[in-house]
Amino acid sequence: MDKIVALAKRRGFIYPGSEIYGGIAGFWDYGPLGVELANNIKRAWWKAMVYDREDIVGLDASIIMNPKVWEASGHVASFTDPLTECKVCHQRFRADQSDEIASHESMHNAKGDRGVAWTEPRQFNLLFRTFVGPVEDATSLAYLRGETCQGIYVNFPNIVSSMRVKIPFGIAQIGKAFRNEVTPGKYLFRVREFEQMELEFFVHPREADRQFAYWKDERMRWHRSLGLRESHLRFRQHESTERAHYAADSWDIEYDYPEWGWKELEGIANRTDYDLKTHGKWSGRDLSYTNQETKETFIPYVIEPSVGVSRLFLALLVDAYAEEEKRIVLRLHPTLSPVKVAVFPLVSNKPDIVEKARAVYTLLKKRFVTAWDDRGNIGKRYLAQDEIGTPWCVTVDYDTLETDTVTVRDRDTTKQERVGVSHLLSYIEKKLSG
Ligand code: ATP
Image (cartoon, rainbow, N blue to C red; front, side, top):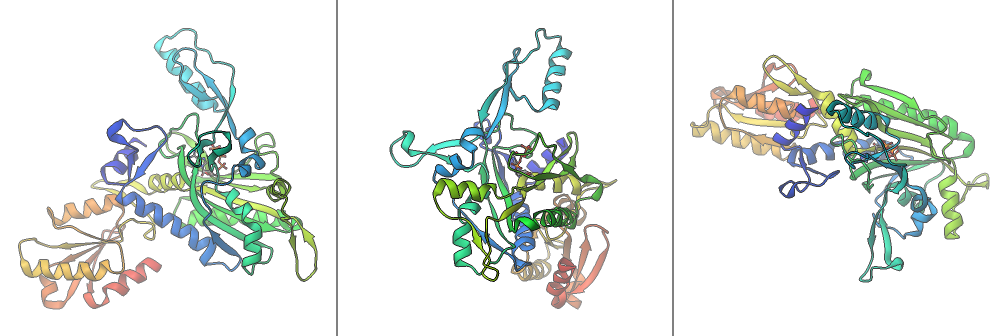
């Protein structure tokens, strides 16, 4: 994990938030390559959820909502974690995270500290608060959303009346969520500001179990399609004591993170009709659905797959990272790689070659995220691209001037192929779609 963190900083994926001021726990900044990888993850999700399907529509609801939303959803009263404090060093932890409690205790024990004990846990609310408008009092109190899905539930009647959707259908959303986590940490795993990719799939209550099983499989299939190794992924069903009181069933897709082991990557829940029913009650609006053919009216059940971008980002980085004898390589799926192609002039002191290489670079840059590198020798340039996961490197050499062909070097095989410049766009396109 240390190597991943160092590489991500050195190569412009992830920086600590506000670093020059000493940082701020639980907040990270995505650098030039990080923002590309994150955007590619989000694009892949949106494609699988919205563009490739006929039964899901997209939404982008606002982060700050009427505070009644959070009262109705139960977040104001009970979006809490049990907080406990170490009596030796006064550091605070989540009392329900026994691995972190145990490792903190062993740290004190190893140092020979006496009186290692914990305060009685108290409930700590994770919602961030703010005020809307110039007056800061109870009437202007608002919350940064703790999950994106509430924006979906409150828009359910708008979508039903403005779009031609019929149950079963889904609403997909990608957006920021905020949680004032007691113990942020584990790098990007537990942060206080993050993005969620959430689908709320509305179904007839009778169909809920079948749809739940479908979405469980579908989500696992998607993670594998991104290249995550099968042996690093597994399902875990929540115990009845662990899941939210309204959820009929809840499973996690877990990823086997180095150092920390199996941890939740994505949650899939059957949230029943709880959310629509509750918002219906609190808002006074009728959130039921009427099947126009059968005239049956009912409150739909909701199947929710929900995954955080940063947890997936981290899983993809660690899964792709490989140390080989002569290089470090990120074997990211090419559609996720931040840079798709790099273009090199073989030498930088021959104007003909540099000029031709610039023309190839300009050609590729119109279609793909393309890098230019003319420093050092070709071998070093390959290594620099391998480390950030660039799938193809194009070199313009002396032969290019004669034959209008370039070499294309493949990241995974390190084999080179000669390709005509006139075919280069379709060559890369074909590789990417393959
Ligand atoms: P955990 O038990 O690990 O705190 P959770 O069960 O509270 O997670 P959910 O409320 O189910 O998480 O949120 C859905 C998804 O959002 C999670 O599967 C995870 O990918 C992501 N997520 C939740 N909290 C965080 C966080 N603090 N930092 C990064 N991602 C998060």
